[in-house]
Length: 412
Image (tube, rainbow, N blue to C red):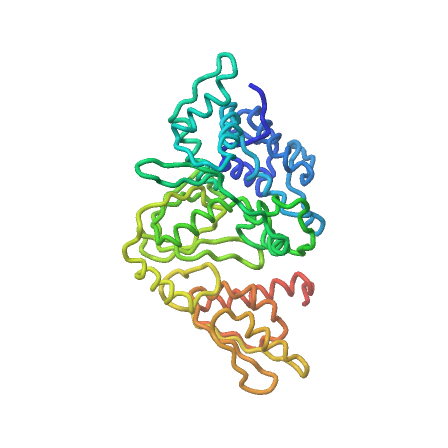
């Protein structure tokens, strides 16, 4: 069978990219889910549109291929190319050009009129040309309406189809589209808009550019649609450690959270079976199935409103009890940026200035352990740490001891 570099099932490409080029770094010999030929075909497909952004490492087990991207030099997110690759049958190509050519006069036609026009104006001129089937044409017309290529209008009992009149992207919007395409979680939309320009602007570069969320764009769109429609969903989840174990969760989606530190994306939702709020990482979600409209969304949104003032990260805590934490820090003359930084980064809780050179952070959170990485950035200034969860205080000082042994020697 002839090899094609174009793809039709993005879910398969997404999984392959994650397992082999992002997280896995597996070699050809480690690919045991399908044949070696399948591995080679998938690799060639991806390399056809990511060839300039790939590196490899030779190990004892074989050659490992991985993504190698310098965000300071790339003109745009190369992973958007995955969405713009698609396979077409001979019939797809035939219908595409003939239907668009038939409708270019601007006159709206019914599906039957389009079938008749395809035969009379085009296909009848070829020997042994097949007669177009109206059900096939209707499916193609419905697809083009969903893609925004055609528009449909009901007149009487019939639908009439015509070309959409899309205006080109105004020049003054080019800068906004260029920034949106690289900074927004659904930036692939901006990339499509830039494709309509003769020359896309290359004014933006990013020191910390999280491009891997692109692989989750389709899922993110489904989730945002469900949130906007107040719709229940079933999501299929599988972690990287247990990729072969997929679990279906009935949930009501509430919010999308995105880490500014690592670009990781999370869904906050109400779990109907466990009857509590839960977070799911988007890169662990395999599939999203929309369900019925939730009749009482305000009940679950109220859970979120009570949860939000005590949320630090993506943990809902081991139970319903809050952890109370207080941290006292010192700062010297000319270091007013310390209390300002506390106020800016605190997320929740309050900042107090009990006396000159002293500031105190007080919060009630669902899981105080989430604060530890942030608190470590103030090491050398912290004079007192108290928490209702003693494990948090113990771990903080144990980490200090380990750091002293690592950097200060045995006598440190």
